Length: 155
Length: 426
Image 1: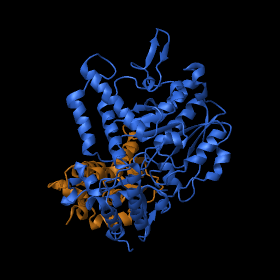
Image 2: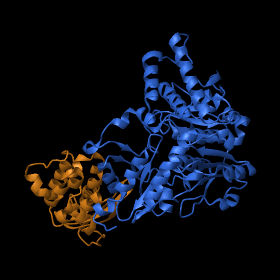
Image 3: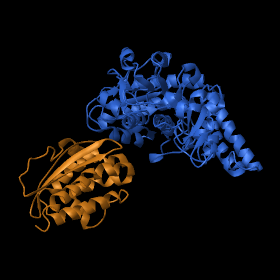
Image 4: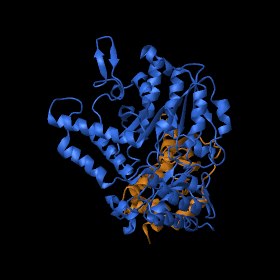
């Protein structure tokens, strides 16, 4: 498999087309957070919205445009995070960031299991210019969760 | 003229390989060009043998450095048709050259420079005119000058192929217009602007003209004096020279009246605690220590281009333009931004920005990169034109004197594989 084929694995191409979670849901969850992220070098953007009930992500939806890597990343993120608790979300985000900076190799520990389909992005790590494409939705997720929880902490 | 093979041998970087050991096919020259050995040598020779404080000091190295610095200015002046060497002002890059004039006008508007600078004053009721094709560097400085002074920014629109709608000149440029700023050649459509009608209309209403010549000076014969513009900006690194150096050209009398905007040493005649009088151009604008080695390199680049002959450079790029633009526009699912153009008329540069139906430009660039082909992806610092042409971003191949026809054909062939790679039928 060439580097190019390793980056654009079939699961990525499929998700780039399917775009799970695309279309922002109207939420009446007890805590809602939303984040808009832009990649100014290429104009890619995403708005990602989360709904929280207690510690559980009950809804993850997004709207955006961008390259196949950024679109597939948002789609896979949605599948992984919908219904996850915040601790798992945090661990998955950390694992994904670690994978992106692992120079095209799998992490080789239990974090790969946590990432599941998202390990398909392993090849992106060989292309520093594309890492930010894959990270765009994850940055939005982290920010959206922070915004959803900021009002609820201590209440 | 040296043959193309000779020219390629002058560029050491072209012999390296890139992804998967493939030969480098460098088609990103509109972003930054590669440097010939003579430029690399000129910079190294300055640094290793002649470095000294320019225009200061009484020792031999200072004299040699000054001589090389000013000889480089003369080379660049000759390349662009300056009537005097002092019409070339060194700037850090072309963007700094645009800002130099915009900020100088802001200072004139604040009263700096007194009556001498009155013709640069601008305020409420006045206007600056740009075009819809401008690179951000020839848009934002004027937009912000208007924001600072209360003047109005207006623009000439383009049609669906990115061509200036010249019929708007008579209405958009009017008695309120103080300056008209426009690109000599577009970094997106590659179209070369017919300068004459813009200059004629600007003169009719007494407005100054500012030409963004970043994409023209490196690729075709350019004579600012003959074009009739008042100011022009261009950069070193797009014309086979180093980064960190650019130039402003301006008519001598105008440069002598424009107030500086970077204040400091080396620019002044008389300084008291309350007042300063400025030297004439170019020195009033060259405050502080200049990028001397880079200027020397830009001078060497000008000499290199003149030795080949700008007509020959343009002739070569006409052939490349034909292959890139015809080839790209004939692939199903590929849209060329701008017209194919008439290569014989040189109304386009050796450049093609394309939109691939259903595939983002970053993904297109990745497939090309895998074949060793370096292109630019994104909006190329030109969001308004992309928006106008209905393209969120594009993939741009751009040539220079070292680009071969085979390389242009390889770009077209590889471009044709992109949609199939992403599972789209052609």
